[in-house]
Image (tube, rainbow, N blue to C red):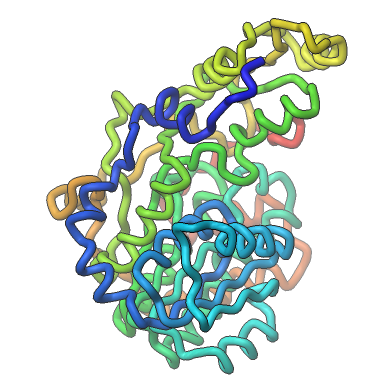
Length: 405
């Protein structure tokens, strides 16, 4: 096995096909603008311990904010992020820096920002991001509470404590959503953009982040360390960006973006949609293995249990996707959305159009809270989301990803 496996090199050579960041030219061309808007400013990052939030924060630190407050419910992740920043020669934290392992929807969070604020830049990365979270009514309620209800609460707060820049991360799954996660993020877009008449707000839809926390690709590494078989769908394709590119997308959208617009990377469906199966096979080849394609999970687990240090073949189960909410490909915008592809070399955006009023989104939030005030099932949640989002076409198969390796 190749012990010199380099994730960054593998992402560039075998996944994105890019040896430098997609956004390098736009970052270079806008260095002065970024420095002008960030240097000396007070910054709050929510969900800073995750792959995207941490990358955004580290990209932003290059432009010398005066104050940085980071928040995440993942105490261990937050601790490691601070250690990483303190240990790197290329990153300098401001003197006024604090990290808080707290929930951004809690009373203590608002107590904290009352005392630490006001903030010039606020970026929210706290989100449920997995399709697997729609498996049952409890997980669904928690996801919508995080992605929608808490977003509404912080928008109401910021309406009275206005930042210069507010950014909230979205997903490509918000375009023509077929799962509840994507629908919740489309609803989040509608909700936060309703406040764009009060202060500057931007968001971004973007690709899968290669080897991000909790992703299938990160799972490949975990399976290997535990001598467990790999598993992946045969028919699912996704756009991919590197962790650094993910932070750069959000930084540019947040700081350089126009009020009310939704940003996305300019990737080509013909060239840049990548099959998970091909990534998995390349991953094993890179590590010095031959793929031993198994016909079932049971066969794959049995062969993994028999692996030795001299094994040259590694078991992998490749299956056709059949779970609820699974879209075989991704897209960044719909046929009905206007798109601008000229302002940036690497970013496109959907200009402000048909923004709801604050009263309208407040009524939507009230309808969700009413449903959740009693025990509701998945079908009822889907029905309400279809009423709120007429274009929502949920894919229901009765199966979920927790039933697979």
